[in-house]
Amino acid sequence: MEKNKDKEKKETEKESNDMEKAGEKSKEKDEQNDNESKNRIKENLSIEMPSTLPASPNPPPSPAPTPKTPRIRDEFGSIMRVDIEDLDLILTQARDRATRMKQQYEQMLQYFGENLNSTPSDTEFWAGLASFVNSFTAVQREILKERRERREREERKERMGRKERDEQNEKKSERAKKESEKQRLKERLLGWGSKGDDGGEEGKRGGKATTPEKEGVPKTEAENLTALQGSEKRGEGEMMEVMDVMEVTKMTKMTKMTEMTKMTDKKAREKEMKTEKEMNMDMKMEEKQRSKVEATEEEEEEEKEEETMRKPFFKREQSKRDRAKGHNGEEWIDESSIAKLSSLSLSTIQSMFAHDQNITSNKSSNNNRNRNDDDDDDNGDDDSMYRMSNSGYSPPSTLSSASMTAAAAAVEARKLAEAKKRSSQKLAKLMLDSLAARVNLRKEGGREG
Image: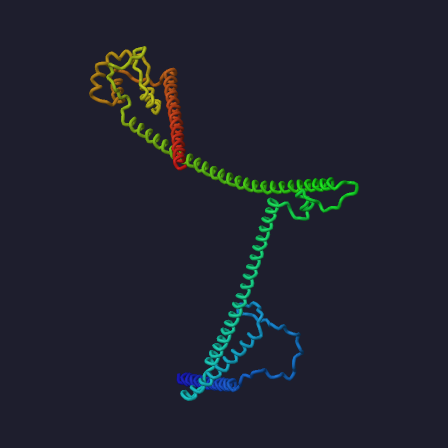
C-alpha cells in the first residue's frame, strides 16, 4: 500500500512540474509575441508616407500608353472612367487620412506609455487599421458617388436639351408646312398663280402683247391672237384651281365622314352594350321569378299534402242520404279519395273496391246504422271497416281484373290531367312575368332617356 502511495505522489509531482514548465514556455512565447508586435508598431509609426514612390532598382518594361481618363471599379464592381483630378483628390485625401491616423497612434502610444506603461495590443492595432481602411473606402465611395451623380446630371441635361431641340425643330417644320399650305390656298383662291405662268400678266388680262408684229398679219389681228391665247391659258389655270379646291373639299368631307362613322360605331357599340345589359337583367329577373314560382308551388304542394294527411280517408262533407247514387245504386267515390287511393297499398284497395253483391244486399240494413255513425265519428276508414265487419261482410281476397284496371286507369288519368294543368299554369305565369319585367325595364329606360 505504501509503495502505491509513493508511486502516486511521484506521478502527481511529475505532472505538476510538467504543467509548470508548459506554463513558463507559454508565457515566454506570449512575451516574444508582445515584443514583436511592439517593434512592428514602432517600425510602422516611424515610417513616413512618401509623397512619391521611390524608383525601383529593376524598372519594369514600359507599358502601353494609358488613356487620359483611367478606369477604376466602384463599390458596385462596375468599371468607371475617372478624371485625373479625381484621382489626385483621392490620393491627397488618403494621405491626409494616413497622417491623421499616424498622429492618433502616436498619441495613443504616448498615453499608454505615460499612464499604463504599456503599448497597445495586436487587437487594438488591427482594429485601428480596419477603421482606417473603412474610412478610406467610405471617402472613396462618396467621391465616386458625387462623380456619378454629376455625370448623370450632365447626361440628363444633354438628353433634355436634345429633346427640346427636336421638339422645337418639329414645331418649326409643322408651322412652316402650315404656313406654306395656307399661302398656296390663298394664291389659288385669290390670284392666278405666279407671274411667269399662263402666258404672262398681259395675256391674262387680255391687254397688249409685247410680241412683235408677225409678217403678213395686220396689227389688230396679232393682238387678237395673243389675247385669245392668254384667255385660253387663263381658263386652264382656272380649271386647275377649281380642281384643287374640289380636292381640298373632298378631303375635308372624307375626314368628316370618317369622324361621323367613328361616332356612329361608338353609339352602336354603346347600344349593343345596353342591349346586352338589358338581356342580362331580363335573364336575371326570369331566373328570380322562376325560383319564386317554384318555391311557391313547392309550398302549396306541401300545404296540400299536410291538409290531405290531416283529413280522414273517407271524410263525408255531406250526409250519406244526400250523396249521389250510381247506375247500380252504388256510391261514387269523389276525386280526393281517388287521389288518396293512388298512394295506398293493394290490400287496402282490394278491401275498399270490392264490387260484390253482398254490399248491395246489405246496404239497406246498414243505412240506419250509417246515419247514426255519421254524427259520432268522422274517421271514415275505421267507420267503413266497422260497418263491413258488423254487416256480416268479409272482404274478398282477390278483385276482378276489370275493376282493378278501371281504378288504375282513373288514377293515372287524373294524375296526367293535374300535371298538364300545373305545367300550363307555370308556363303562362312565367311568360306573363317576363313580359311585365321587360315592359318595366323599357319604361325605366324611356324615363332615363
